[in-house]
Length: 95
Image 1 (cartoon, rainbow, N blue to C red):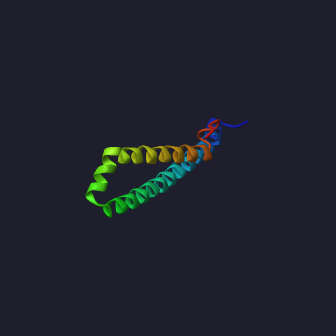
Image 2 (image 1 turned 135 degrees about the vertical axis):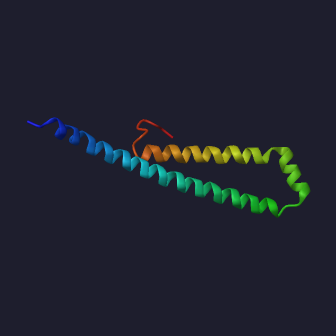
Image 3 (image 1 turned 90 degrees about the horizontal axis):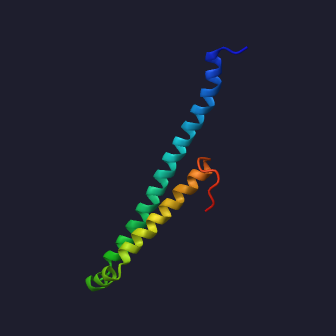
């Protein structure tokens, strides 16, 4: 018969391993998603910097910058949810 410390070790070791794995994947996912979003933002800023002032003002009036922010946020959330689904935190999610 197993003693109480042995039972606790049988429960704790897989649990700790799963938590550490999830944390590691979460950090890797966050860093990669953050790097991707930073790359896209820098490319957009370079292209905007090459435009004339009046063209940038027309884009600002049209709300392009807010639209880009919403689109990048949606892509970031979708990538995060896919990463969470892949590591098994969100089981029944359909994207």
